[in-house]
Amino acid sequence: MTSLSSSDTRTISSVAVLGCGTMGSGIATVSAAAGCSVLMLDLTAEAAEKGASAVPEEHRDLISTGTFEDDMDKIANCDWICEVIVEDLEIKRSLFEKVEAARRDGSIVTSNTSGILLKEITKGFDERLCQDVAITHFFNPVTVMKLLELVPGEKTTPDVVETLARFAAEKLNKGVVHAKDTVNFIGNRIGCYFLLSALHKAKPFLADGMTQETIDAVLGQPVGVPPTGVYGLIDLIGLDVMDLVGKNMAANLPDSDWGRACAEFPPAEQAMLDRGQLGRKSGGGFAKVTKLEDGSKKKETFDLVAEEWRPSTAPDLEGVPAGLGEVLFTETDHGRLAWDIFGGTLRYASDLVPEIADDIVNVDRAMRWGFNWTQGPFELIDSIGAERIRAKIEATGGEVTGMLRVLTESGSPTFYRNDGSECLGPDGQWHAVPAES
Image (spheres, helix red, strand yellow):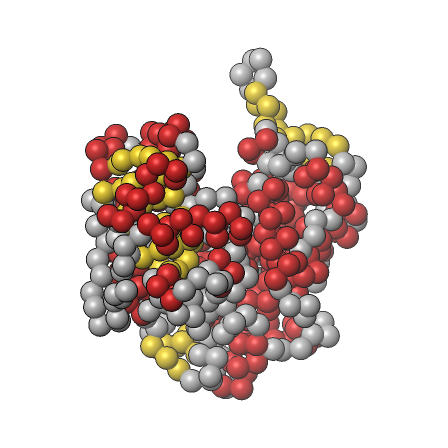
């Protein structure tokens, strides 16, 4: 057996995409646009052809298709083999066995998973695979979203990470963040905690008469999140996808993690899931739009208290300050909502470094590039004022922990200094901020 060491140079000019659904087609598209030859394989020839048909015509001549059964031997010609199949651990492991038998030495193998741990996928595989394997978590739609989370395993050689990072940045025009092999990586760990915790923490505000439209509006632009807020974003993602994320959290997070408390849906949302009311993909989730005969549109909201559809209403933002994050410090229902949910998310992010990433920079970039936040959580804390955040935590009976504690002990007012060229590390020292990919 031969292998490549970190001193060897790998290049990627040919790609195998295993799984030709929406994500697989997106990865094939950006790879072909980068000038790579792309082999697309799926269970059936029809599925592979359907996936290839989504690739723009100008790149179609670089695409070939086939099936796992008949054409797996062709991956021996590919520099990078990217698995993009269903989020099921055992199915992924079964496909990896076929990949390992067919690939050539030195080819890079990755899984495009949104949260399954690499160590679970590769458990029991020999070093030949483990040194060449990583997670490449693209965000959907691949052709639009900038973020790529890159996650190595314990035995992955440095040149694999270097090659993937360089290729993704220079050829695929992606923003690469370096994550660790932990539950849901960076973006989904924080972003989905925000969404799932909001479903639970919004309940008393709904019971007191605050509308879902208002909750979405408060938890949107006023805190630096896109205007879809919570319910609108879950409708876009799909309640079924959020359920899978929650199940992964429940199965893998430690008991002390805040995410465990919100991993399961509240009763009203669980009932929506049970009857297939998933979001835009099902024609409606928390909201729906119906086109009327006269050409106009009727927008409705599914009232989570009454559990029935009603006409959508305008949000009530009276008294919400315009400044970024200022709502967190207002003594109103809007302010309490924002602090309970978004303030809690900032505290959660503070506690996750260095668990999910070695530094705050990768966390901030993941949330900007993957969830379109105006700023990442540590950038937001700098903008809002860390001292104000600390004072609010203590005033509400909380404890200052994680990177917020490191910041306090450092004596610095901010996580970034020198015009953003340096950042505070979990070791309490200052480090140079790497250039954006």
